[in-house]
Length: 323
Ligand code: URA
Image (cartoon, rainbow, N blue to C red; front, side):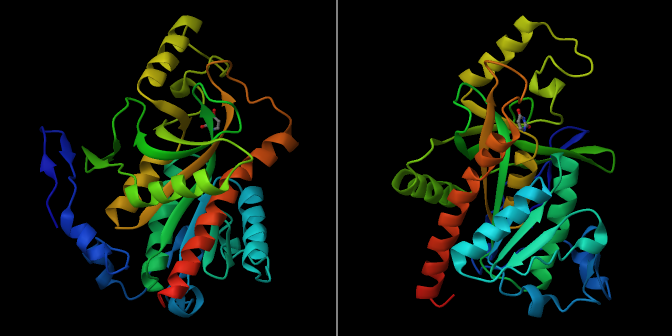
């Protein structure tokens, strides 16, 4: 493992590590935590699952896809949809019900899991779900975030495949504070998966627009996304539009609240991960997400359609290769 490079007295940058990619070619998740070896059992607290109480290889060893999204309604609906697509009976069981935090459904090789809103909520889920697939000895697992976003200059309903994830300062990092220092981990998106999704979308999706581009990930929905309609606001309308135009010039096509963390955590553990989000509003034209709920719900199924196509294609490939 390469040590973080110290950039200043305050900032450490964890650089791209080739060995990580080498290891991940075995198909296994890379756990970079020697302390876990010293645990007699590991409690995945927010999932209400533990290595003591659950036989993880037996229960989850066949998992090949972990699909995450914000809400229970969306992820349960995705599980039902995948059950139909894969011709599997959906049992409706929420594997993490006892946690009262997240919800997790299993449909054959697919997990459909809620991550709540924002980086903090997503990061907790990612730590525990990555450990779950590690303990379960899953191989060649693909992670997909299927979510919603605000669009920059694109028609609402457009599906965006993120090819670059940046923070609110347009930097391609997930930055966090550890031991009182700033640690930056690159939020690199998996090129192979992005290309595969783009090609599936180009060939098989005709009913709605699908594009790829840069996704900006912010710490909140209102002020960091230059909205003027929060409980308070210190921005002028001109400042807002100037900022959104600056984003457009930087090829940002959508804004959401999880991409840098998701991309960075997948990359750091050698997991192929991709972010697919539908846009609910064109932020150049307004702030409020005001379309009716049924229509918005219908839009939220669009990333699921692309995800399902990828899953089915990969499963057919794995079958042909006996993986
Ligand atoms: N999610 C966001 O983070 N922003 C939006 O504008 C819409 C959904």
